[in-house]
Amino acid sequence: MVRSSRRRVAIAYLTAAPFVIFAVFPFIWMLVASLKQDVELYDLAQNPFLVRAGITWEHYHFLFTHTAFPLWLRNSTVVAATTTVVSVVLAVLAAYALARLRFPLAEATTTFVFIVYLVPTTLLFLPLARLMALFHLSNTLWSLIVTYPAFMVPFATWMLTAYFTTIPRDVEESALVDGCTRAGALRHVVLPLARPGIITAALFGFTLAYSEFIYSLTFISTTDLKTVTTGVVVDLIRGDFFYWGSLMGGALVASLPVVVLFSLFLDHYVAGLTAGAVRG
Figure 1 (cartoon, one colour):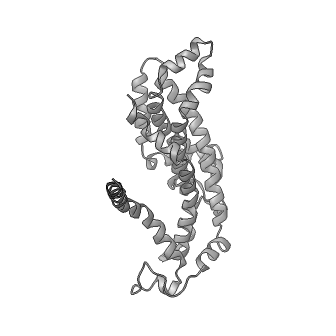
Figure 2 (cartoon, one colour):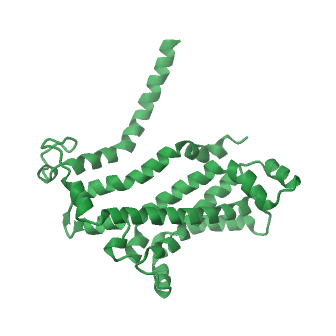
Figure 3 (cartoon, rainbow, N blue to C red):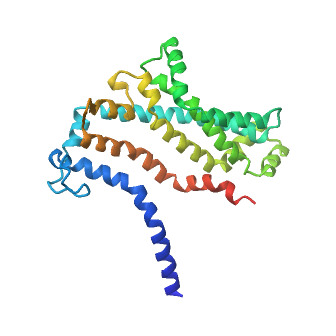
């Protein structure tokens, strides 16, 4: 019995090991590269997975003292957090209407929302740039806060519509029979049950906004207003010269907020992704 249990555990670990290595490898690579001295970093004869010449913090020192990296990190966090809150609120209302309310062309509207999400940002940033110029929002963080919901709301709406359909109507109808209004039923009954789905949509939305590149590169030109995705690329690549150590350090530090968020809300995230699979 004990031997069989150990065998199952061993098989489980061996099966998961390749996926864990695949997921962790980019972070290990960035960490090792950011701690190497330039002499070793550009020496192709050295083992890329080992630090032989000694660990150096010079790349991180350059990143935090000679660039606007702290400001880029703050700008990305503020923009991503603000747009996520706005987009999720709008998506909850839209998804609830599509999943619960009966009105003409409801199915067509759901399909249209999904199609809008599939429109690539490369087709939208030119007309949106024109709008930002007309409203005098160019080269401000507001240009990102206003435009990011254009691709975040359709995505979150599509995701939450599917989640709301997994919540039994009986619970909501019981609240309506007891005298609760539609808004009250949404607030007190549906939203608590839909918390895993909402958190999942928020995590995905935050990741999309935090890692967005095209709009940030187009709308923002001032160094101190750049987000981390554009600031690191624009300021740490000078022509054909790459500050590889600082680039890897910046990418590693910039990824930490997303890693922390997914770690904190992992249980809700898994529940939100698997809710529809166990309905029945």
